[in-house]
Image (cartoon, rainbow, N blue to C red; front, side):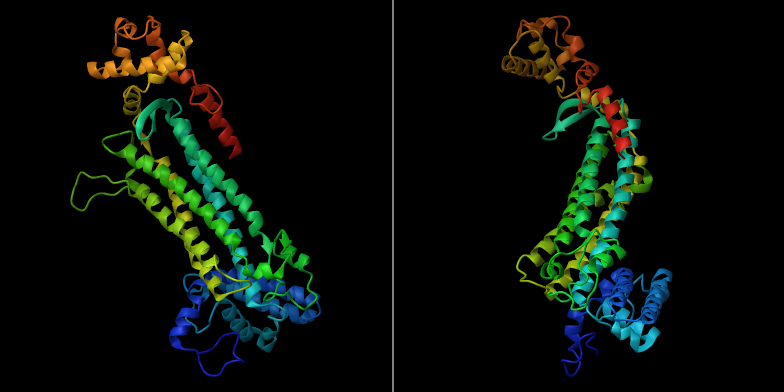
Length: 462
């Protein structure tokens, strides 16, 4: 078995079990496109530095472009799985194939660079592209939430704290709450992308290349915002992966919370929504069941994405400068977490676009649970009662209603006045659900006009 790109120092073959532990081609083949893009830019950079002639640069670039065409066409199944070779990693695979295509000239390409700065560059290129893809998927998920808010802009439902009915809100307000979360996720990823978009290439193993490479021009060729400022840091830095995985984990937690709400809303105990058949399943035993599997998986997969973040932080916590082989363990959590988040984001519109909201059930629930108690307290404040006194009086009225087995608005004025003399015949208008909503037209509130404005603003930002 070959020792890949570092053969001269060693005699004999590597232990087969060590090869299994060491070799990364089974998963880092995903970086092949980025490795080729980086290698094309590097060939031109060392050409400008006088290492390669113009003719040699063109031959090397031609060979690399041929390999890129293989990748795009998935020749040999490279894109769908690791090639069946003995190559140690994607870098040795590319070098071997380049030598096969252009001859010994291919051995010159690695002049002045190390796998340390090469892989750091590849992973940054891959992460940058993945962030851009997630940004598109986040936008579509947000669009589905805004559309749901538009459809349900007049639907009343109970809002909850501690899973207890709290105050009536609009269903649209609920949808927009998750839109806000995903908008923050999009902003976080965009901000993270700036720190991803720094080029390590030219840092070599740890001390910087000895060749007169114009790193600023090289960074521009690869679309990086800047070249790294410290070679020792650049080759051992994986902060950008940890930060990216935090953004992924946070987004997954938001999707999990939304899924949990919808799972509850779909139960017979709530009965607020029904999900489309296309994103639900039945039971292998119970014919009547309709299970919210898509949402349960959105909730469940968040654990894997949070785990990816913990994995990279644990890997990094004790590493001395600069590069250590432990850093090979950065890729699988990153690849898997990005794949899982992509799948989750893409399923969100399929769940929400097909969601049927049972508006009357939502409204009836909003009328129950004494969720208009705060309205009664505010009514009393409007009559000159101090809020703390009003709070106490309403609490006693709620207890009375519970004893009577009725709603607050079903108590007579005489019964109410027995607790608070400030109550008059106009109390019933104040207790109506529409009145409570209309009083919350503050920016960010659940008032109908405020929500309508929020929908318009969210769509504009989108």
